[in-house]
Image (cartoon, rainbow, N blue to C red):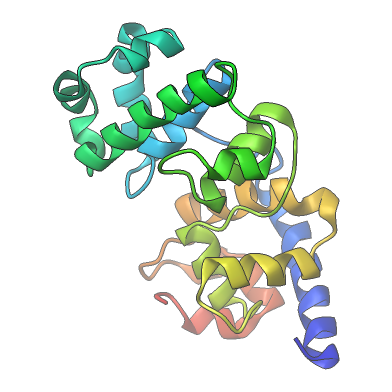
Length: 220
């Protein structure tokens, strides 16, 4: 990122983040869980699925599968039926049950506290790892880049890339480290409750005043 663009984007994201803080001062993850294992399962289920649906599924799932051993001993076909509504249920079943076995064999039955350890688990890419580490342990290794964040970044011209990994690097350069974790939650709430991908009433969106060009961009 050239110095001029870096300076402009840092100033813009600072103003955007300040506005987001006022809009969503208590923004946080909306998945329901009680421990790191449940969080890992819920985040893996949330791929291409709404948090609302995941919470509906895990309300039943977590009563059936209470411990790590329950996942290890699980019958894959039965597990698939429990998570069917989340989509991609076969691959998610393989990943979740495979991760459970790896946790038992390699990590003493505990969800890893490092990025390297998280990325070794089946079905875990950097986005999932970042969410679990920050939410479960308060370990902030980066910025979670999901579809809401990608759309936000494109709309407000905060990166020249579409790839989540490159976008994350740009955001980490633009934002102070103390803002990394909370920024994602605010942007997700913004995308869910104020500025969806479809056209909406931009007159009620205070972020448009910060960057008027965003008012003409709905889908990316």
